[in-house]
Amino acid sequence: DQQVKQNSPSLSVQEGRISILNCDYTNSMFDYFLWYKKYPAEGPTFLISISSIKDKNEDGRFTVFLNKSAKHLSLHIVPSQPGDSAVYFCAARTGANNLFFGTGTRLTVIP
Amino acid sequence: DVKVTQSSRYLVKRTGEKVFLECVQDMDHENMFWYRQDPGLGLRLIYFSYDVKMKEKGDIPEGYSVSREKKERFSLILESASTNQTSMYLCASSLTGLEYNEQFFGPGTRLTVL
Image (cartoon, rainbow over all chains, first blue to last red; front, side, top):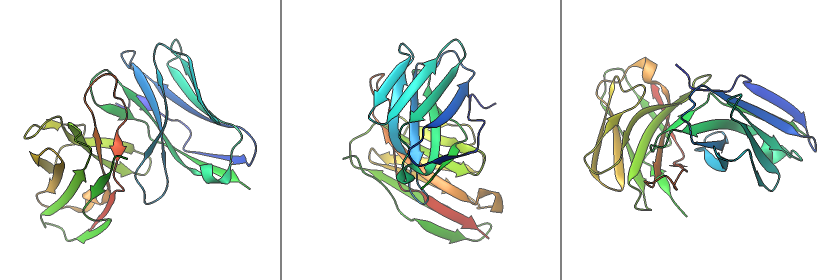
């Protein structure tokens, strides 16, 4: 059973606007959440993370929000740029070394 | 910078062949992982290893085995390749400890089984 879900397989946004990627999870034991970005023919690269004791983490144009009561997190990209076009994976950790990944959302930023 | 390398970017094999996928990391990480990525299914964990000669099954270990004889190297073995094992295979590594959360990925091997 998928413990981390990304219900939107794709998202298209105009350059300069905000991109919001969503992720839901079912396991209340997850203590850390990460976002990875993946370009075609490359491995995923780490983007930003958040601990379960926080509700927001910001790094430049990227902000991750965590709503523990709703078991929901989101990644905001402002402003979106064409180079942000990629597949974004949400991942969660239970305190062990394993990560549980979502199915990914393909973001297309239109120039 | 952490570097994770995989032996092949593209591989084409025939049904029934034994296939070896090699992964090497250069940052002395304890943990190493093998995933496969398929459209609509995300990254699914096949096997992982937290130490030399140690291995644990992930979510989809059937049809695969692994070997970790040295800390820096983690091999994925398809004993008898089948067409449903056509996929992108990704290797990753990480440090052990709650303060270490990030897994570092290799570029992937796209395997096609005919």
